Amino acid sequence: MTYRIFLVEDDHSIASGLQHQLEQWDFEVQVVQNFRGVLTECTAFAPHLILMDIMLPCYDGYHWCREIRRVSEVPIIFLSSASDNLNLIMAVNMGGDDFIAKPFDWNVLLAKIQALLRRTYDFGGQAALLEHRGAVLNPSDAVLTYQGMRMELTKNEYRILQVLLEQKGKVVSRETLMERLWATDSFVDENTLTVNVNRLRKKLDKAGLHDFIRTKVGMGYLIEQE
Image 1: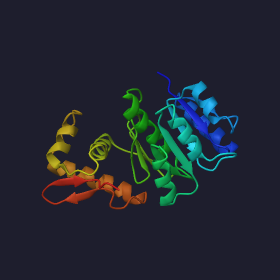
Image 2: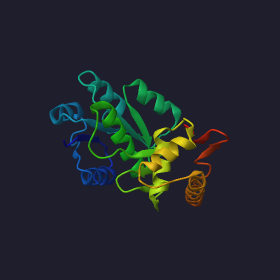
Image 3: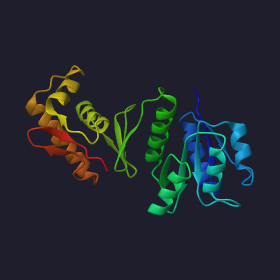
Image 4: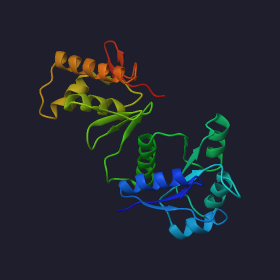
C-alpha cells in the first residue's frame, strides 16, 4: 500500500526537498498550491498524514489544523522553526499529533512519520526506524545514523541496540540480550556479550552519543527515556 502525505509548507526549497525524500521511500506526496484553500486541497487528496508548517501565508498552521479536525482525524505533524514549549503546547492543543523543529534531521522526521503511520494504520510495510536522541537505527540495513554520519554495526551490535531501543525506558537483562543474539545462530556467552556492548559503546561515544547505553549493576542495560 502506498501512503499519501499532504505537505503544507510555503518554503519552496524545503517543500521540494521533502517531496523528493518522501517519494524515494515510495510515499505519494502532494504539496499545497493554494494557501487559501488548504482544506479543499487536503480533503480532495485524502492523505494518510499531513506535514504542516506553522507560519504560512494567509492563515497559520493552527487555523488549518482546526479546520481539518472538523472533518478528519488524519495524523498531523507540525513543522516549525519556533521550537519553544508554547508552540509545542499549541500544536498539541490544536489537534496535532507530533511536532518537529526546523532545521530537522531527515532520518528523525522519517522515523516519526513511520511511527505515526504505524500507530494509526497498523503500518506493516517497511521495517520501522528506531530513534533516540537524534540517532536513528534502520533495521533494513543495520545502519545507525546520527548528525549525517553513518555507523556500520556488526550483527551482534545491531541486535543489542535494536533490543534496547525497542525496550527504551526499561532495563533489559543480560539473559534477554543473550537469548536474542542466540536466535541469530551466533553463540554468545557472558564475556562475548560484554565485549560486544563495550565495542558498541565506543562507536557511540566516538560519534558523540555519550552515555547512550546505561548499565544497571546486577540487572542489565538500559536506554533511558528522554
